[in-house]
Image 1 (cartoon, rainbow, N blue to C red):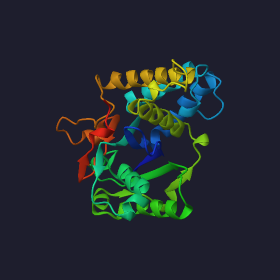
Image 2: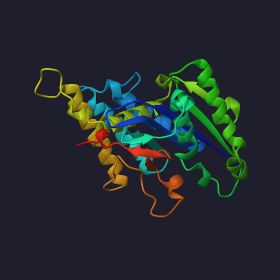
Image 3: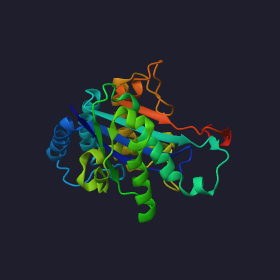
Length: 278
């Protein structure tokens, strides 16, 4: 019997003070898709959230409402109805031997790695029953030509020896750019991704120019981040958001874990400790 998984993917800060190139996504099976959407929409409606929710909209007045949505979201994660993956780079690891192509297409090259590896898809189909992927990207912030080329590369993953062996298929017409306004799951990814980059880049310490104290919005965002971190740590006590989640020698964890972080480190690099927190 064939299976279908849907991936919602988003990206955030390209260059941060300490960490950069943030990508986030969630994976849900088609059999759980409507249930997860309905549960999140119901929480939004119960809290009068009729518009798109996103990290940049977090304020003191909306804090409790956003916490309620995140609470429901992480209930879904904890019960393994959805899987969440966050990937980022750390500025201290400076890639070596890059040419102009790598710099020009860095955004898409990293996004490709995220889709291919972050969810542990190569461990997802041990029985090798036909498995289809549907992938929704939040609007890609580049030219139509580059975006189309990237989507073509994602589609061609099904032709790789690994995906062919596992019978994982990615139909061309099942990959699309979408508006997050219309997809509550993508909105939730945006919030989690925003919270993680906010904390890793010490944005919770930012004070307005000339002020001795942080702004109310910064304080609200810090509180929402702490709430999200508490929910992550309910699943994985002492979870460290700045490193790759360990597997304890079990490669199946790349797929089985409901929530994972991946610190992407180039194959060849030099360490620049000037780009680390003091």
